[in-house]
Length: 162
Image (cartoon, rainbow, N blue to C red):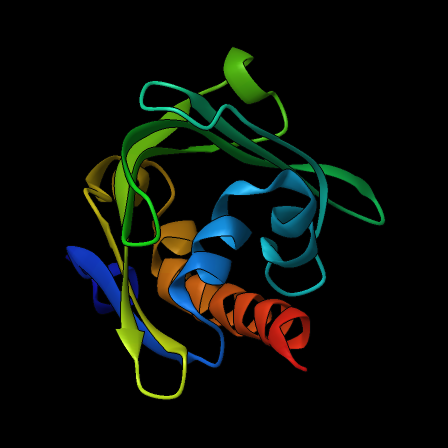
């Protein structure tokens, strides 16, 4: 494989967020909160649908000033309130379900940290299909999540501030 297309088998990121686990958990599942942080760079979230149950859909539409850019068509595989969320994460383009969906697995684990904070661990794995179809996009998954987690932390910390 050419070095410019080398993609790790999984993205593994950790953050300490200055808010309790229940607030961080809600930020992943409340569409109004997801809309505030689930877009990297200059992208914006234009719509969010969350059917908060195992087997429910988790759908995010993203766009830029130029129009629709795609987003995610996902299914909730596991919910352990305030502790863990597992999703079958599907990357999609502007055609949504009429175009290809690149399935992967996203696991968010939350544990209580000192000072009413949360230790968040994000593992995004099974990226092979995305890597094969769009190596440049697959290479940016880690950077994208890092940016998005910074926005998540900022959103939740502002809400948790006294």
